[in-house]
Image (cartoon, rainbow, N blue to C red; front, side):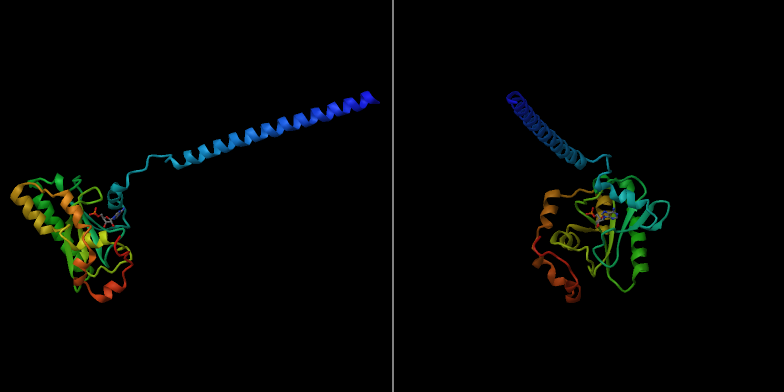
Length: 224
Ligand code: AMP
C-alpha cells in the first residue's frame, strides 16, 4: 500500500516534471517561433523584387497610353500624374536625355520643338488661361521634361511651400531661357545649392501674385 502510494507520488512527480519540461519546451518553441516570425516580418519588409526607382516614373508614364496626350517622331507629352494646376503637362523627348546637364548644342532644335508642342498643348487645353513653360533647375525625376503649367495653381496636389516655390521662383526656368543658354554656351549649367535654397524661400515673398479664389482652394501646409 505504502509502496503503491510511493509509486503514485513518483508518477505524479514524474508527470509534473514532464509537464514542466513540456511547458518549458513549448515556451522555448513559442519564443523561437516568435523570433522567427519577427524575422519573417523583417524579411517581409525587404522588397522581394527589385522595383524600379521612383525617379524613373516618367519613363513608365511616357509609355502609358492613358497618360499620353500627344506624340510624334521626337516627343511625347503626358499629363503630370500629380498636377499642380488645372492643366499640367510634361513634354519629353523620345531620345534618352536624362536632364538639363546632358544637353548639347545639337539639342537646340529638339528643345525648340518641345517648346512649340508645349505651347500648342496649352492653347488646346484652354486658350483663356495663362500658361508658363519651363524646367525645374534641379528636377526630382529622371528624363528631361518641360513643364507646361496653367497659372491658376488650382490643384489638391499643390500641398506645400516647396511645390509652390518650385513653380513661382527662379527655380522654374523659362523654356526660352534654357534654349538661349544652350545656343550661346553649348551647355546648360545650374547652381544646385542656390536653386535648392530657392525652395526654402518664405511663402510671403511670392503669395502677393496669386488670386484669392485660387488660394482658398489650396490644401497647403504653410511653412512645410
Ligand atoms: P521635377 O522633376 O521636379 O521637374 O518634376 C517632376 C514632375 O513629375 C512633378 O510635377 C510630378 O508631379 C510629376 N510626376 C511624378 N511622378 C510621375 C509619374 N509617374 N508620371 C507622371 N508624372 C509624374
